[in-house]
Length: 416
Ligand SMILES: NC(=[NH2+])NCCC[C@H](N)C(=O)O
Image (cartoon, rainbow, N blue to C red):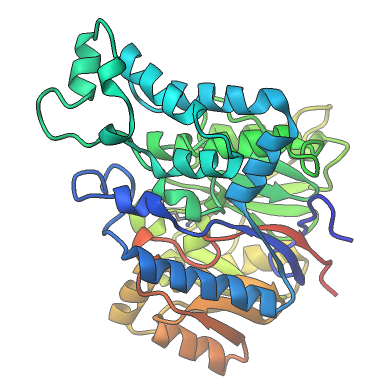
């Protein structure tokens, strides 16, 4: 039975996973907004969708149940009569519009959508000026006038939320509960709304323990969280995740009765885009095997956080040793194998790292989904005995995230 959430590893047989199929939000990306919205290029939607459909089908072919974020949120909204209205209110409050008249016109546009799924999709797509009744805005303020275009061409009133297909990031399943993450960037902070509604109102998921409250002032992103075992998680101290956020998450996980976590390993990684999250730096492919960004070998500081002497207290100690030794200790093994993205070729390493060559999604120990385009790394993995499920990736990769980033595992069996 796979009701609720159960994640005690990165590699146990994957039973249930949540994805988001990229949609019309990508059609609202333009050269003017991609930087702010954390894209490096504009993906071709039709191909991105075909690639994503293939990803989902390959997961189903492996026996995995595929859930979609927009459908889950729509189910959550349908489950409670109050939820829809407050969803629209919260969305509008966070949509970045300062003009009260334009804001009201956008609210009205969303209120008019009856079907909850359509409403969620519209929220993700964003709102263009020609979709709302701006003529109805009475006594416009200066902010209204400027936001409505101010005489210039400014067709997008509410930015799209294009990173939703990286379902790994805005909330993280750990054990039987979830960390509702606070994202670093404004664009991705808006995405948190979906997790909040899902875990408040969805009949199947509204009772799970919450390990992190997104109202906290400190940011933490799901790509930085790896569930190494039932009792140990790894978290990146990164560009996206602050130490104070890890303190809070650790305190909850270490002391909650509902959690099995007994140690949080905090890995300090460079604050750079190519090391964006811990899962861009390494992911687990088998019981004792990881793929890694070669740039991380030798430079890593790791701290372990465990229970302190009194209830609610934690103890921090700096770990000795190289990455493989630290990971072996986390997993209770004598040694682990690290496979370098791009092998020993520095050009291949940089190119394939850029396209998430070390960002794999295990469907069971030793069987992982990878981007097909990373030929050098895939060849090395293949010769190391890893079973590869290669997904087409010409367009999906342009958002700077791989198979691990594009999935949130909801349920894995225990590792045998
Ligand atoms: N878990 C991950 N590595 N996610 C990748 C997210 C990529 C996304 N464009 C961002 O910058 O936020």
